[in-house]
Image 1: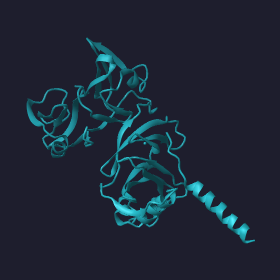
Image 2: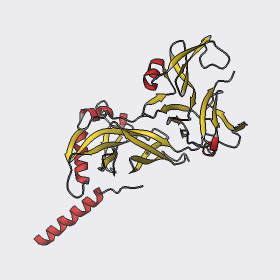
Image 3: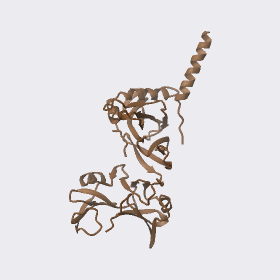
Image 4: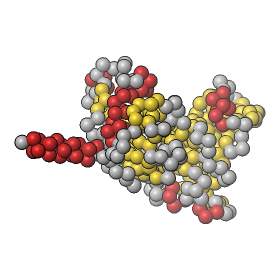
Length: 343
């Protein structure tokens, strides 16, 4: 009887550990402050139990709950039944770290869910909590599902919510100072039925996010060295109807400035830099090819040859008459993007 009982316990423990084990398989806003907190010691052998213990410990952390806005909603709760663990070296120290999936459900008493990954670094025999990544949820068209960590890059997939017929597309992230920064979204046709592309912002080589619209002081802080240039009387085609116009310029960017010191994206040159452009159809950079971009639009998209360059021209947003002009040069690669205001 005792021997059978012990066999039963061993089998139960084996099944539990197997269910906890997660494989390393071959994705705006993300949060985290770069600080780490010791949450659980690493266990020998299978580490799923110690990772789960680390997550349980951080669930009650005030900062963690504040980032998820849990204390302000009596209905919202953390859901862990489908929790998964993704392992891989996030911070480049040669040790596998962990991303733990979970969801927050029932916000405001509704039937909704938003999805997240808690970030744990493998430091000195401890699992240290470093931040939480927001991957959207049921109130969006897409949520982002992480799949693996490869050479320090977190690989994922944008998954449509519901049955809207939207395409899957690949996404990538980089761990930077306690956050996951979105560094790539595969170009895709979002099936909205229009030849337009909206520029939402930029990511610099130093992993600073610059919005397409904002304030002059914010732009100066984020973009580094630049200067304000007074262009005199406003010509036809300016973004702000102020009677005169000014630009903020640095080596790569041009933003127009309003009389209230608001700024809006005007032009970016991509040659010689690692700036990433966020759009509603994926990311653009200096390696983006003309054939990739054309797949985002139907056959009526305007393509013109201007000497050695090719111009692809689309509307700058849904229901907007302004144009987004994309210039491609040698090898069909993207060189510059201009926001063009039609008169």
